[in-house]
Length: 345
Ligand code: ADP
Ligand code: MG
Image (cartoon, rainbow, N blue to C red; front, side):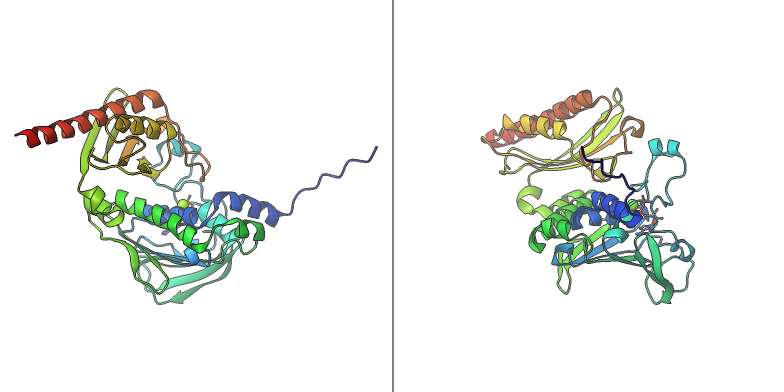
């Protein structure tokens, strides 16, 4: 019998890199994290610029509150956050970020620089970070109010991960889906997305409205067939609003934009049930476009999930899905009837 191999603790940088690679999986989800940070910082304009779909570089510029110069020292360490102090806070969290993991993770798998200016500073400060630590700066530099984050060479130190990623074009497609969805949901905030040295492919102005944003991003074919819905349910304590296409529109792929408590998430059960409602009214194998913003009591949804777990579950899920789908069906039928009535008149 051979002797068993000795158990050794992994090197700290290796542990951190593995953990970071789980949080940050591709440009699109790094960008999602950074957009949420900008929204948390009360930005009203967020500009995303990428090279090679974000694989070569990602730049996010916002006009939010900025980061204090003295916070640069720890901003990229793991579990540093300005948003949460007590575990109990997790149940009533109102901001997106809560675990202080995004920037730390990015700094372990890419070259990260942050430039930021707060309202109280005369100039901006710029610093670079490696493996969670401040490497250079912060140095004074001319700059606008807000934060500019630069992420270069994603997974430069994880060659297997890097080569498993799709082409720049495919990554760009995923990036533009994320930016487009956040742009629609956050009507007060202006969003831009472009390739470096190019014009914006996505551009929504601040203080826009849902229909205009949907038109900008998904086109007029969808925008002109939208029905607005609002549901307010006292029994299960949830509110929902959104826009769904009427029966004049259908497409091969179900476009479902779901935000629960303002987070872009997936909920397979809900998606399936809404699709089933439409199945009765649309041609075979065709689907609608639905944008749905659902707000439920934060006590009833566990937000303490891993940042990459997009699929969510919540208390009274079946009942809430049932209430939502029946409200949607009523609306759909209503719009259908009024259209028929109009045509007969
Ligand atoms: P979390 O969002 O969970 O707090 P992050 O790693 O995403 O963790 O960010 C760490 C901290 O850095 C945030 O709590 C916030 O104070 C600051 N921060 C990050 N991005 C921005 C930004 N765009 N504007 C202002 N502050 C930011
Ligand atoms: Mg965050």
